Amino acid sequence: IREIAEVSAEAMTVQRVGIWLFVDDNSAIECVTLYETGVGHSQVGTRIEAADFPRYFEALGEQRVIAAHDAVHDERTSDLAGCYLEPHSISALLDVPIISGRGCIGVVCHEHVGEAPREWSSEEQAFAASIADFVALGMEVSERVEVEQRLKRSEAELRAALDASRLGTWRWNIRDDSVTWSFGTGRLYGEDPGWSPTNFEEYAELIHEADRLDFEARLRRSLDDPSCHEH
Image (cartoon, rainbow, N blue to C red):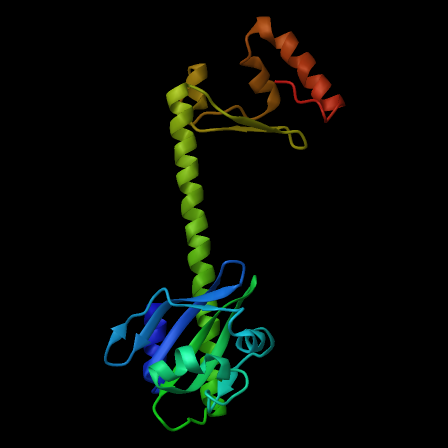
């Protein structure tokens, strides 16, 4: 998203573009990247608390685009004047909430620096909205990749633990009588690591005769009473 902020600043001809995300149960927004023309990226970690700026946060929750041509005097953004707008010489804001499947997760802020207000055209507002949508999409993809990577790591850790302890996991689909088990379990039965029985009958034949009757009895009790979880 750093690149998105930079590209947007150049396309919109604004001095500052920041991307902020909600934190702490949406009680504040925190800057995750801020691109300044001629400076680069800076000020990551700056926070704005909802309790201190209620009108601005209310506008974020209600409006698709906050086009504040005169940000210091616009009622939606004026409460930012003393602590944020004036210290950075910001006279106009074009802010668009970042909307994902989880709702509003942040905001893309285009900040015009200078004494004169700036009139944001309808085309600029539409472009800013598309930038916010692109940020939302990029974050969803990143989150999905992160979840997949965590899942792969968990699977690898589980496999390593099972191998080290010479254990395995198996699952029987009663509806189609298919059996699947974790990679490496076949070694416990003198087979190749990737081998597994194709149905329950083949699996049952692997159980030692001395244990088979007890196993089948426990299995019948589990099938008759779903609340029973004997192993």
